[in-house]
Image (tube, rainbow, N blue to C red; front, side, top):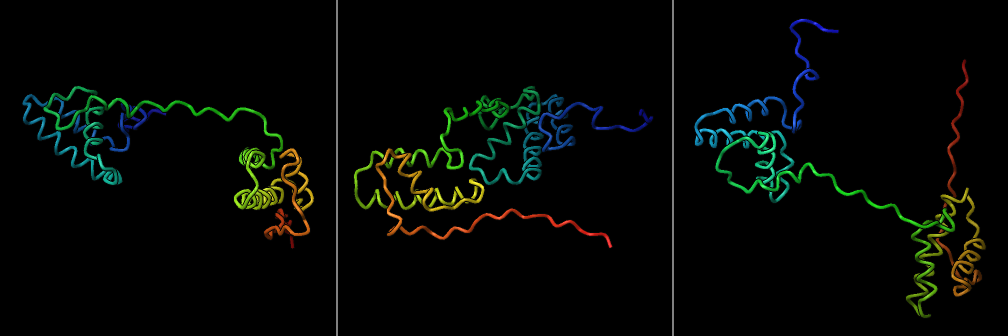
Length: 199
């Protein structure tokens, strides 16, 4: 639909830094068009002060002034010819995207325990006997029980945890269920939505 006299943002030029708004962009364009270099610098300083009010959370950063001048440089399409108070040569890095993070590789033997518990079990296999290993066994066993309650379809059987600990550590860790005390774990109960009856 084309209505005469209405000016929509969708038909305007795309903003390079939309967080500052179209009015600031117009001021930057005006500053670029000024003939006098000193006047352009005065105008640029005023624009940076206004930009600071538009995005106040930038003040939390130690180098927020540098960031504002970098933004001004980019908004001017690198055309603003002034004596820059900060080095704006690295301003382009703002628009560079970080490299994608690699996904963890390798299969997890028991998905309900997860990779971290697997790493703990591998560590337990190599640890010498002592208080440190006993404490890690206690923490690992309790985490395994919580994981079973959450991801193992509500099963929180102590014997299952002891069996898994022994199996995944190649028999190095043997829990004595007669003396070992697990932390209390509440079973996860799925909420069943009650259907409302019409009256």
